[in-house]
Image (cartoon, rainbow, N blue to C red; front, side):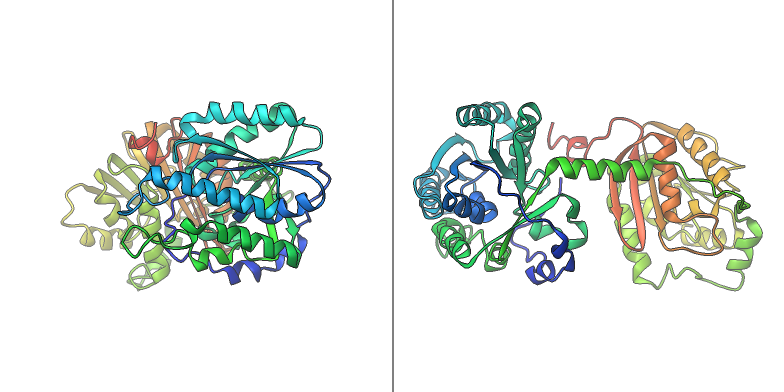
Length: 476
């Protein structure tokens, strides 16, 4: 799950609204006659769906708001307000907000402890099922927090709602809140988005409803721990002239299609000779007379990428690691600090000489000159790193290398892959080609996927994938 800090500034609203892709997002189909809005915490309903509630009420649609927690955990360090004092305050604020948006709308409170929805998901499921049963599924629209919003409670509410939608075929949409803070336009699931355009009256009602949530929009006091949760910067996201909802079914279909495309083996071009792997002579010529041909020592791009690579490793330490294509040993230096033993190999002698000098104080590093995949170090490894090396191989050699990689990975082992994504005429493959093959041939579970314009980084596990929080016992 995404981690974020609401106190940080986050993505600027101007970046969101300036994106030209909004013009292609379809408008929400308002063909429903009943609206059920679920809030994980008081104020979710106004932030994510305030305009929808106001519009629906004005159309004569029956509106029902279900509030799962009282949001009493909003200020855990407050020296002036206890959770038991915040709970009724936040209930009153929500009732006032809903009365502003849809006078006479039905409101129910489940009273589940803030932050524990996941542990009470069966209770949420039963209540939502009962509410929809009383209303009747026909013509109903169920609106809940976005399941990938990055907040534990939002994810749990979405999970219960998605189960109900699958069982009853009730129409389900999900509204993001914190996504606007931690994400960016290029990461938005545009294919799953729909928009509700808001008129001046609806926007005014939404802003009035938001002002009802005083405990969140204003400081409880001047004391540390009583700061406002909804900063002016955050509220900018919800002053737009439109609201955004995601269709989780469309999102899952598009995500599945993308995954399938990534996992499909490379199509062999017809009638064209296949480029062979780049051999020793290529690298000997490339390194000749150059102390740092890749800019490992000088380029911020390379320094940043190494930091991201090391940070993406899911375990704090590895017993026996293999790095294929170690070059001058800049990444090896960081890996060695996380491994009891590191075998680092390269095809060319000159960079190995540089690496040997760099790592001379590291007694846990074994540097070798090997031509992978024809040659391979003995033993098995709980970490194998393929960084900026796969595109040097032909398709056949890449397949052989991946076979040997899989055979050398221990149970519970981890494979790290990172590759440049831009085309290089001399290389047999692209970085995207390499990662498609890794996904298609190895059948490993992906723990991490980090994609930028310049490089793709993925981490795979040989056993059922577990997040870092699960690996370290933070969650069960």
